[in-house]
Length: 365
Ligand SMILES: Nc1ncnc2c1ncn2[C@@H]1O[C@H](COP(=O)(O)OP(=O)(O)OP(=O)(O)O)[C@@H](O)[C@H]1O
Ligand code: SF4
Ligand SMILES: [Mg+2]
Image (tube, rainbow, N blue to C red; front, side, top):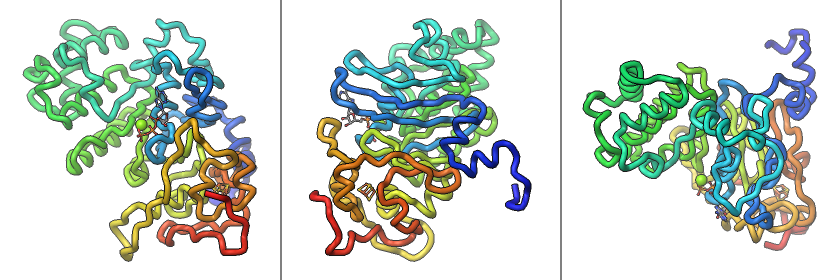
């Protein structure tokens, strides 16, 4: 809508801040509210995540290894083993997933929300033919059997770019390459006609050419099916290519969310700025890549205050004592940084943020 257009009922809410707009918008397809995951009820791994996915939206989740990206979504679908406890809510079309019976949950997994993982061989059944595995999903989620199921299985294999379908249906996962197995996983995910596909590092194990093909496939089928996508990756470049919006995770929390273009060109949070400064660019002048110093803290060793403080080049003393909330940071944007109002929005091509000038308060590393 052009800026001069009169505001409608939702526009003033959006202008007032995403928190308000979120609360009043039509129910999200999936909404995580103050979602927390802990080991044996003690060590929190995911710490109060609030996030929503709209119908048809592609949301990217990025962050370094160990930030809690996978655990968040595995826990949301109740796929974690014993010993992990959750708090808060996971609402699917407004209904709390925690309250679903095992039978209802089985229909949700695959039928409403499908998952694909980095390592398809661990998710596929090694002792079942591909055709049998597809037939099972088609029966469970769409009631298809016999010839109808076979026709649909062949169509799905064709759609994900696996030629020679009749022969392939009779084969086992070990007879497929890594890229082909990932295509099988995508076919299995599509078989249930889900509303949301959660793809956790779907291409990390593949070489660059196959990675690009699989990402193109995910992009195309998402558009065709109008399916929402949650794409989890440590590679902000991959996510930037496919997603409408990005959420950045650090030490079990969301530290920034923004429309993809805004996040990539004007990151607000020092952690996001650090991730982008470490990313090689194909265009523009060559610049020195600057990895973020230090490592993600283990869940049991998360520092008080802002968890990023020991690694943050612009940290000040109060960062070590106060936990930053995720707050309004511009149209459709939120960020969790105590210095949000003081720090300039940075262009992603700028160098990584400089350390606070000497004489300013510094947090001990
Ligand atoms: N079963 C478990 N028990 C205890 N801690 C765990 C368990 N599983 C994961 N963790 C810890 O939880 C944190 C988050 O793990 P998670 O797998 O979600 O990270 P991630 O962001 O997906 O990382 P990656 O990019 O490597 O996949 C890590 O510190 C990890 O060591
Ligand atoms: S709150 Fe402080 S330590 Fe955390 S990101 Fe902001 S400036 Fe850095
Ligand atoms: Mg992971």
